[in-house]
Image 1 (spheres, rainbow, N blue to C red):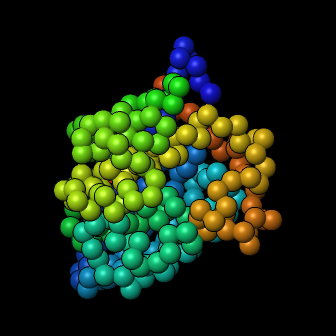
Image 2 (cartoon, helix red, strand yellow; image 1 turned 30 degrees about the horizontal axis):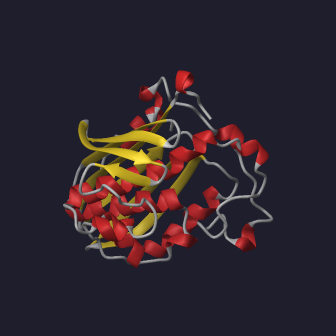
Length: 251
């Protein structure tokens, strides 16, 4: 783990861009952090999802790319303004967590006809379990949480709230934009803990049952890819720099 004198920073950037087309819309969504770099593209017509494509540019294990194919289960879903609506469409544990999250953000953006949304999460490495996580939305600060292990200590209304089970349900009491940002930040906090882990020594030990790739029936074929890890501590501008052209698409 990083010490106080060499404290690094976990960075995660998420960007969703939409374009309106006849009878529907297109969304392109990308995410990058130390361990992941995924793209999800959605097509919608007459208020429902009609097509999904994915790309795993960098992933933590060999099955993440194939897991993206599970997003076809969103085809036929009605557009909804809450990113968490995808949870009602299919089993999240039979999806790639991060591509599924991206798709949820894309569905919401299409429903809202929101042309662009950018999330930038910054989480300094924990010192004795403590960190201060922040998220900027479209370049403007939105949330700042004092976090001890996996519990938010401040501010209200988050104080005392576990980042585990029940958090998504809690966000339904928030303003829609804040709820979406809170879910993005919560996921980043989970992933950021990986900076303290030496994945070269773990083998096939991991979150069994936590996502499509980690289901027991696929454990024998899964292989970790620790060589895909990057560190953006000192270069925030590098996060998703390779996605600019792909996101600047025409409808």
